[in-house]
Length: 211
Length: 313
Image (cartoon, rainbow over the protein chains, first blue to last red):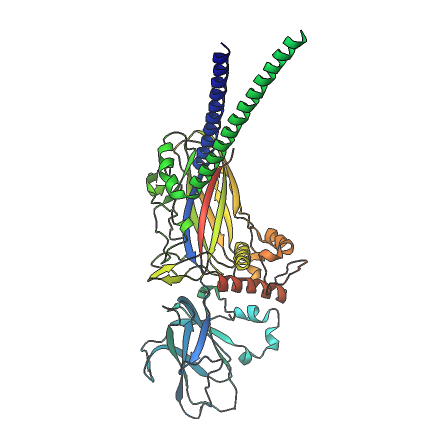
């Protein structure tokens, strides 16, 4: 009798531990599944576009200045300056030209190809427009227009279509054509800036800041 | 008398000892199985692949919500992602509205987030130039309740920064940024510069996502089962300090935050930055702000962007 009593007790204890183990398993399973049920995810990827742009001369050497030299305005003429744009990564960019108006020069930028040492100028110049004098305020702030000599204030031209570099360090060549009609030579100095930027600025908004 | 008593107590003591022993044995057994269970569960969670089939079986009874994404273009990175982020399944077709077709999670944990024309992440095969300062766009998704009534969801825009990929056996392989410091700093700055706001007309919400952890909450009151609700996420990466300070919706808030959590917005070669008040004219602040963008660009090659949704009780 004692033996069976022990056995019953032992069995009861076993049963109890089994039930408690089962209960724990059930609770944990429910918790896990509940946790899974409650999470949903949408996933996408994208790259960071932050290429560095360089301007190079016709010999593919990075440069800050492009030598234009002297212009003989005693007769009609024109001059071509080659420059190249490259970027550390595939990107779109804007070309902007800023220049003072001390000398009556006309500026055009043509896309070009480089074949060996030769630069072949494209047929159609880049379309663009001069951003109006609304840029005066953005450039000079509240500094009075009277105090800035009209010709010393640069005007900004921007290509209307974004240009693109299609691969890392791909090169895009351009030729700046400066032309003039015969003019009086007063030994003036002209300042010309070519700017390229990856911010695709809205031409119509007239934002002509230097990048 | 005394003798009999001793015998009885001795026998009781013996019984008690036996009971104790058995209790200890059973407890040990229970703890061992508990431990084994926890271990198995953790292993189960960790290996997402094996989880999927179990989830779909369970999904028949008791999923509380699903997400959907209108048809669009799939993101293209041109390489393989780190293992933990490869388990993105194809969402099943789902009719969101009469005129909007899409894909939904339908019991699956992770599906692709389709891009639309206004997403502007530049992450499609046709247009893959990527993200940069001065850009903005819009991402959308739908929440589908599986039961009528209220539904409270906690969202998290998770960003995983990846470094320049390596080429292994002709394959392009992407990895998370390996250097812990760089990972932390670049992610912190990116979160401070890539700002998200969320709009849900159904709950009349239009607010900024927490820039520190990408979190936001939506409490839907009268959800109708299987009736998709649209949530729009507008993202904006300011070009300059002025752009963010002058932002009509959150310029003031972010300006205040910038003076408290400088490390999320400004960078100066890793040195500590102290700013009292943010001023868009302050040249040094502008420099630090732009340096942050440069740091992001120098160190992060690409990001994985995940919208995680959790049910809150």
